[in-house]
Image (cartoon, rainbow over all chains, first blue to last red):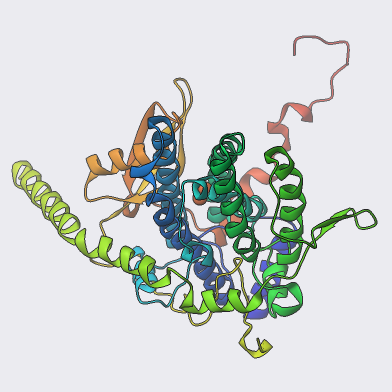
Length: 315
Length: 122
Ligand SMILES: [Fe+2]
Ligand SMILES: [Fe+2]
């Protein structure tokens, strides 16, 4: 088969909803797009541990501490599922991680915002994990098999993340005046960045078509964002709090909520590295990597020695 | 913001400029610990099923990491790990001819046989 025929056969498979597996032929651009998307998704899970990790030692009770610890551990797991899915496309783990550290690969901008109060743990679980879930549920149907399977596993674990976050806010919302204010403040700070997680408007993201055609992505940024707004606008009623958007209003005709304009200048600013915590996050990752070097080397030396010993015993 | 800055975002707000463009076909770099495939038996009586892979220095570490990565919610009662380089696989490009022999043998399926409806327990 020539390239054109291969490409056609590939697209036919996608159109018939047949998943693409690692050893199948795929266009180079499909491979690269998936490597980029999956590795950046993995980096997001890993960097995403930092803002929450910040509160583990200061959780208000042993129960909350255990829950937060379990959640952060899950995010590490998500990163690992995704790194291994990415490796099936022929890139090494080390290369992937180097790309993060050099700034060549990115991660979701939401993690460049600071976590200032305990209520932020609630707002992150509810809004940030909530927004991630919206995207990840869509990705359980993505066309690349290993990515889709990792997403199924991740989605199963995510719902606890969102629920524990909402429960934190629910508890605060029934507390003292100070606790209520803290709850509202966290919602105010996390609302807009959560909406930004879905990316630029459809009219402004240029090459989205190819990704849709290959069924890597199956819903547009605006579609997902709208679903998210509709969901949160309902859920917030249980908290007796408000979303910081005067233009948020149910639109009977559309059957959706209308909402205000995102501050796109802020969005691009954080994307380009100028958010409040970009530098700090990357430094934390590099430091962890560098300080873990001796462990990786020692474990490797130990394994080599053991393997040699077994070889000589067998001889 | 000028739209010339706006580039394709595949995953939400993550910019894609210049990233992930290199693919190397050496899946394992020499500094990485070897890659292991993980198989988990979810409960007694069921087969081990492939769940994913991970890096570990040796088999024991692979099993311990597999426990932490793949069984945080009691998903398994038994774990197998196999170094990925020991897995041999059929070639998907040959799938057509490779599975051809089974294709025309529909008489291997019970539904091939046309029997009276009244006939029970068969
Ligand atoms: Fe996650
Ligand atoms: Fe999560």
